[in-house]
Image (cartoon, rainbow, N blue to C red):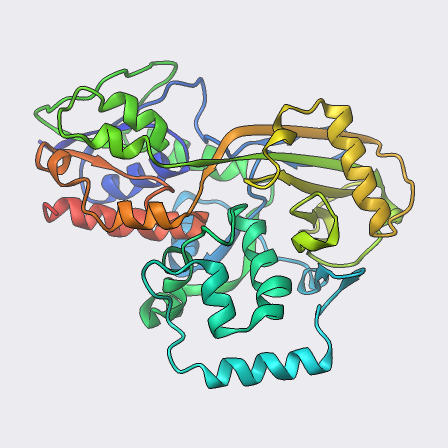
Length: 402
């Protein structure tokens, strides 16, 4: 008889974890408090086009392509327009620095002999050490705020950048994004269907308030603040450690405009914090993936640790803020034909130096000895492609009793 595994949480971490445990021959049951699988990932089909609640694609890699092929899911490659990416500095541009600043960047980078992030080094400090002040301000920090939505003075350079210095990981990583034809919700839906067809049992709308040692493996693929509650009676002190992990609030607003009012041709635009643009970034969805639609679609990302109050704004207040940002980009006063807005008060973990210390402390050892494991995007792998890779490695570690 196959060894049993209970996985708590049917978000992307839970689904990918279940996928790789299934591949390893385990009998799996997935317990989810909501009525559906997917977690943050959900695609809404509006009358104007698709709207994503979270990610609109994932970076291609060998593992990603293997999963797509295995579950029988077709995908779209990015359009030629998506190669153009913008950073706003007194206006949107492909490169936010002048010739002299670029020369200083090259000199600074070549002069630095130890570019690998140090433990305890923030993104801000690493950037100034390796790239220089201006590239950090106008290249590095805007790029990372579009993903991590955190404070550069507190974000851990080691957690975020170390993988780029790992030669093995580099060979598996791609440089462009892909997405299912029917949106990201099709990915989680297809994963769930694949798992069910292969014997995985799902129990929806079922809360688990406490997890204790059992006669089979238990994997907590839930946010840290949920895992903290589930492990509050364990006695190992892990609940207190998990309570120290911060989460970042985000608002994702997808607005639809008449098709021929596209202000820029490209992937999207990021906004350095000194440019008086409130949003963290904007994606030009119909420019990234070519889907049939009569509308131009933009997804604006608002909030983060620097602007948490936007989470409590009404829809109209958020749209007013976006209209002001669009005016600064000289997008013109074009009224949107419709919109879809999603609020996440606790969207993603804040990848701080404090989290770096927690992850380097081997804080999970006591519960692992009891056959209880943690897996999720707060453990060092935030992007969807990274989570797929991490789920594969995690399954091997559990099999080996580590």
